[in-house]
Amino acid sequence: MRRSLLITLICVGSVLCGLIAGCKKEAAKSVTPPTVTVMQPVAKEVTRYLEYPGTTEAFETVEIRARVPGFLESINFQPRQKVKSGDLLFVIDPRQYDATVRQSQARLDAQKSGLKLAQIELKMAQQLESKEAISGLKLDKKVAESEKSSADVDLSKADLDKAKLDLEWSRVTSPVNGRVSRNLVDVGNLVGSTEKTLLTTVINDDSIYAYFYLSELDLLETLKANPKASSDTSQSYKHIPVYMSLANENGFPHNGHLDFVDTKLDPSTGTIQCRAIFSNPNGTLFPGMFVRLRIPSDKKMALLVPDVAVQFDQGGSYVLVVDSHNNVEMRKIKSSQTEDNMTVVEEGLNQDDRVITKGLQRARPGSVVNPVSTR
Image (tube, rainbow, N blue to C red; front, side):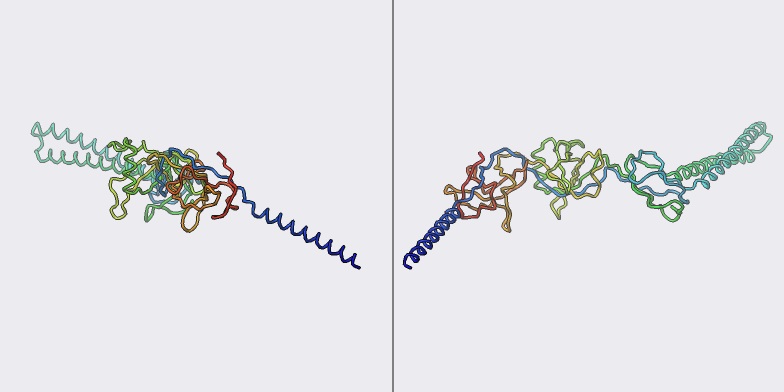
């Protein structure tokens, strides 16, 4: 009995020792500092940029309207089709205008014949008057009739020109090279009877304008950084590059240049309207887009850290750094821009700081970590 009890106690003790040893191992594991990857900020000369929101507009926009009344006879384009200046877009029933041209031409021919007859009679009257065969009053009458016939010819010429112009306007053509929108009126509708009916729109989108507003201080800094732009010429602003980003793009892949700066600042806002121009050979840029624009301002030395190291909270942006005792510390920073997946840090870091770039989910402010440097 005693022997069985002793064996039981020994077995229980062995189990307890095993459990205690396992707990010690687990405790030892739990206190092992997590491994994180750190790197020191990179010192580099960077270009400071000014960023502004903007909107795009077409290089040229033309509203195509009916200039003469009539029934729309045909549409000669497809929506978004590329057209050239002079290409036929619409035809308004031209029959009445063709008839008016022929009528005006016939009236002009008749007036020319009347003028010819009046000139012959005037010449005869002048000869008779020189021989005192007729009175001066009759000669004056022939002179007046000749002048009236000449004026009638001029009036008929003007009527013919107008009739030809109306006939020409019945064929609606594009005044510019560009891309045509959809037709706003269908065939068979009466157009131009009470107003100049809008038929479609043609835009030249080979280049795209981007309009934005520059603050007074930024304008002065931009001109200071680009002294060539201060010259009083229409081409002076082309020396200032402008970069553009669309809503779904990272970075600023579209390169252009400043094209226009208004002549006056708005005193109520302290801003001035500016315009940049961008090439658009593939038609991927549309008028009316909201875009971001970036203008280079000046160059200076700055510290850069990877974008993945920068975190945000209600107080702004921050990074986690490891001090000399391998303790994690939260460091508030002031960042300005990104460059090649690196964030430019204006304030808050020194070059010898160790910034955590990997293992952020295992690092907590105040905890101890095992830092592994990438440099």
